[in-house]
Image (cartoon, rainbow, N blue to C red; front, top):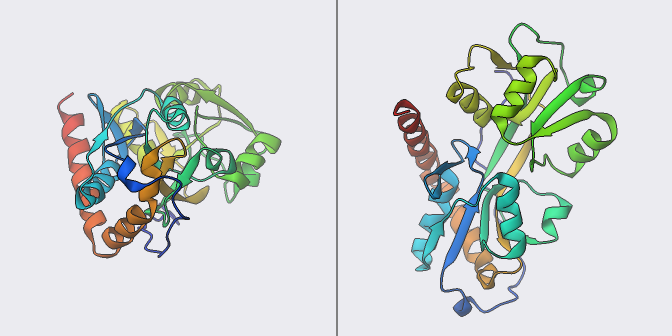
Amino acid sequence: MKKLNFVVLAVLGLSCGPAFAADDCSKIVATGHPAYPVIAFKDGDRIAGAAPTLVAAIAKKLDVPLESKAMGSWEEAQQAARAGTADMIFGIYHNDERASYLDYVQPPFMYDDVAVFVAKGKEFPFKDKEDLIGKKGVTNEGESYGNEFDAFMNDKLEVARTKGIEAAFEELLSGKADYLIAGYHPGLAGAASAGLKDKIVPLDQALLTEEMFVAFSKESPCRSLAPEFGQGITDLTTDGSFDKMLNEATAEWDKAQSSK
């Protein structure tokens, strides 16, 4: 796979001042994407993966209880963070609309590659987003790919939304869509889980690479802990700990799939 990098970001940075006292935060209820392996994926009533492992390690160091909780689809997880039902959401890209109800923790904890997937045998020349104009695309509902690409997609592309990536695969294989936009790693994992790894392939060039964050709901008193979580992210992404978490999450995902 050319020019697709899965690189942990180690950039120093802290959030703005808190709006609540940290003493008001007795427990953090956190949620994330139910189907974005190995960063986040649903496992029973919780969200498992590298991102929840990361925030759990920081919360433990801060001596604040943290519960990782599945809250439906990715779109529903974001709604829970908007309403304050979830104090925290992890593994999320930044855009202006989300920033209206989220306090993003700085720094981001990794770079995440987004790929263009196609049905095998239906590859087409692709160098950048302009090559998608005039073709029919599909992606999962609730997904954002940053302010710039979201605006381009809304203005220049024809992209349908489906409830889950498996439905998006169906659109692709039926010929209703020419391409599918998804995270590179979860796209591959999703195809393998659906038994489609020999039918769906990513194009060689990455569509884009986005920063991935942890964020607190503006409705949560726990948002005051953003600076401490920022320092924790910096520490764990620079000392090799997060790399180990990624490896452990990969093994956990593989085990879950093999037991199906």
